[in-house]
Amino acid sequence: MFTGIVQALVSVRAIDHGDDLSRLTLELGELGEGLQLGASVAVNGTCLTVTAHESGQTHFDIIKETLVTTNLKHLKVVTPVNVERSFKVGDEVGGHVVSGHVSTTAELARLRKEGNDRELTFAIAPRWQNYIFHKGYVALDGASLTVSGVDREASTFSVSLIPETIDRTTLGSIQVGGLVNVEVDSQTQAIVDTVERVLAEREHPLNAGR
Image 1 (tube, one colour):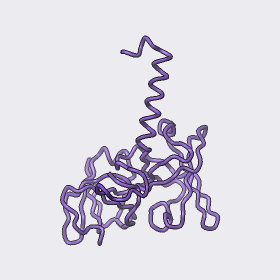
Image 2: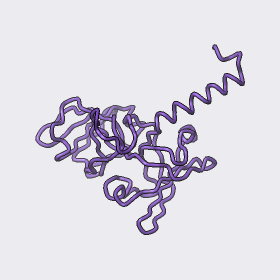
Image 3: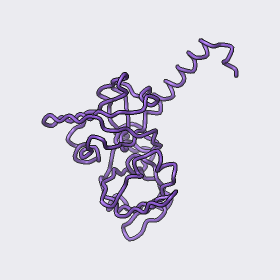
């Protein structure tokens, strides 16, 4: 599990894209100290398992399913990625609890800059839009953010970034058309799915037990 507070913005050291498996290498610096084989690390919000950690380099395998559902398939050498190590029981959760299981990707549709204010508007599939609410939580490339606006007709949502987020995450350099990994808030998803199921059962009671 993760907190959604990005600990480091690092560049890809090496990436080998195979037909159904990619091998990723990062240099985590101090963040890699004490990292054990099999440990979980969020890379752009995607929970990956450490397969090797030696000589300051950390290696991960990325399976086909992960490549299909995330933006990791677009990684190249020197591409910057957000990194967070899994939190320990008792650690402060400065963002919100994030599982590292990416729901989908969203495309940056609009970027507005005014002084220190930066608003990003993303287009997302309607299925996932149902779980995104104004002032609710969403994790983008692993960064915990508060939703600042929602347009359900256009199937878009917006987030506003503070200078710290701009400087320390991939969201500071994303351009229109770029993709981010999205993890919707699990509690919100559970509530929405439960309410929809209950309403459906009330509307069609004969089908409730089938």
